[in-house]
Picture 1 (cartoon, rainbow, N blue to C red):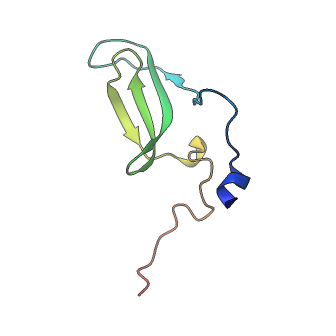
Picture 2 (picture 1 turned 60 degrees about the horizontal axis):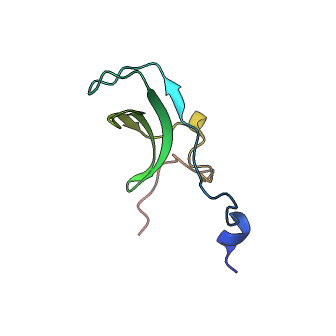
Picture 3 (picture 1 turned 90 degrees about the vertical axis):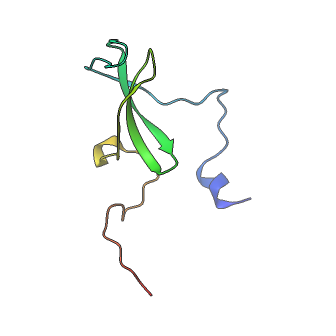
Length: 86
């Protein structure tokens, strides 16, 4: 049994989802006001996306802030400057 199973047990729910927080915005593509902001796992790392819920147009994709608490396992040294150790 690996460490990942001790920290993150297998979910019991059939479907896993994250809450989508409504934002006050209008979609420039379709004119809908059903716009939400929520976390996503992206190929370039964790991101917060603001997206139209009707046509799925991206209004913005941002790096999460400390207030977003995303990802939930963020290391304590997140955002510290790195060094080029040789």
